[in-house]
Amino acid sequence: MSKNFLRMAALIAAGSAVSAQAADLPYGSRAPYTVNQPLNAYSWAGPYLGGNLGYDWGTVSNNPTRPSGFVGGVQAGYNWQNGPWVFGVEGDIQATGADDTFAPWKFSNPWFGTMRGRAGYTVSNVLFYGTGGLAFGELSGQTFGLAESHTNLGWTAGVGAEVGLAPNWSAKIEYLYVDLASSNFVITGLSNGYRFGTVRAGVNYHF
Image (cartoon, one colour):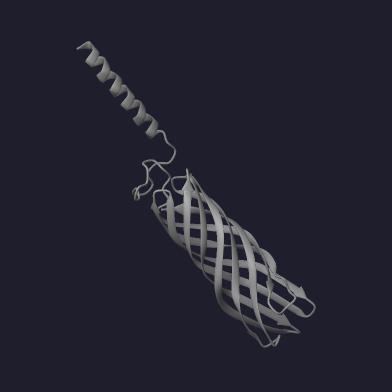
């Protein structure tokens, strides 16, 4: 009788210790648990909204200018999670100071945006991902007092890493290559487009 009682007490104490340890884990349930997601693992599932700052640099096709400058904007997206795998969609819009002047030519990229898919793998509270999709933006040219602007469609691809800082907050850094397709500029008499890379850091709030 006493042996059985001692065994039962030991099992209850062990169960209490495990429950206390689980309660102390830093990443609680922010959203409903996703498919195969361990309890108390960091949840990437659901919608998010955030901002970013960075720098971009590139070249204008058929022109010697090489615009570069700071970039900043906002992004929003939605993630689905299956165990350590995360899949999502994200859109962003950016204002940029990228420009360059060479001889009589000046080209600038006042803004651009993307609509992308994301796929990644989590290690603890860190998400490593690849991303790609549609890009769009403005290329503006000037020469001898004449100005011309075109909004072009193109594509983008890149990689990034995002770290969960708290149940509702994360920080990320990513690289994107963006190719805004060429269009015919009257002021140059040529087809000009903008191809560039951008590195940016950002924060997201997860709802």
